Image 1 (cartoon, rainbow, N blue to C red):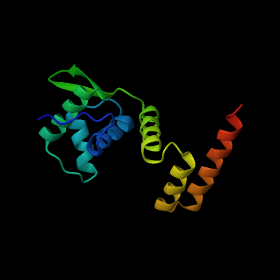
Image 2: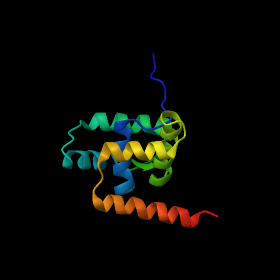
Image 3: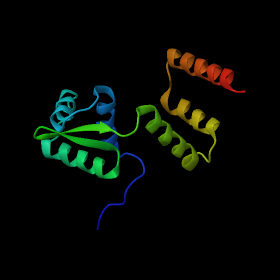
Image 4: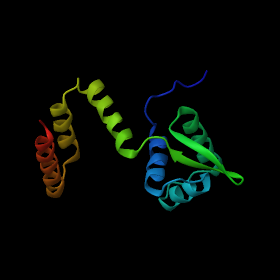
Length: 130
């Protein structure tokens, strides 16, 4: 029985997307090299299978490049992460941004620098509101 399609990337797919967002278009070998450099050993065929599934799900596009394929994320990082956060907020926090942020602060114990960045982001958001 086939696995159900998830609207969001799995953890493994998200790891590969992070590589593609950071490095740009890449082959299976390029992705494998980054994973191995990050001490996340995987077999070439596993990475190839994962990228093929991601192409079928519409997460990446692939174009032939010689004997290999070049993989490119379909969505930009900000758009993909924004969609995931909106879905998480809606499903797990009943649409409440304050509950999401409170839980995030409780669970992550942000540094003083991170708290300052959060305050700055809130101020910037408030300035952009009509």
